[in-house]
Length: 139
Image (cartoon, rainbow, N blue to C red):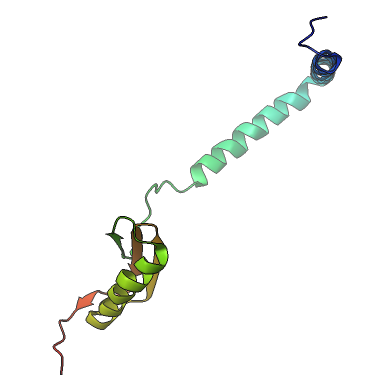
C-alpha cells in the first residue's frame, strides 16, 4: 500500500465499487422482471403502447401552439450609472429625484420599482393604460 493513500481511501474506493455492482445488479433484476412479464403477457404491453400513443397524440393536439403570447403591459427600465457611488447615495441622490420627477410629469403610472447597487441604479416603471406625458410648468 502506498504511503500517500491511507486505508480509508482504499475502503471508500472498494465501497463505491460494491455500491455500483449492487445498483447494476438491481437494474438487471428489474429489467429481467419486465422482460418476463412482457413474455408472459404480450397483450398488456401492446395495449399499454397503444394507450401511450393515443394519449400522447391527444396531448400534442390539445397543446396551444402560441409560442409568444401577446403581453400588453409596457415596462420601461432606466439604468443610472455613477462609478463608485454607494447604494445609499445612489438611492438618495439620483433615484429618489428621478422617481419624484417621473411621477410628477408622466401620467398613468401604475407601479415604480427601483433597485440601487454599487455604481448602478435601476428604475422599472409599468403602466396598464396609455402613457401620457405632459410637461407641467411651475405655477
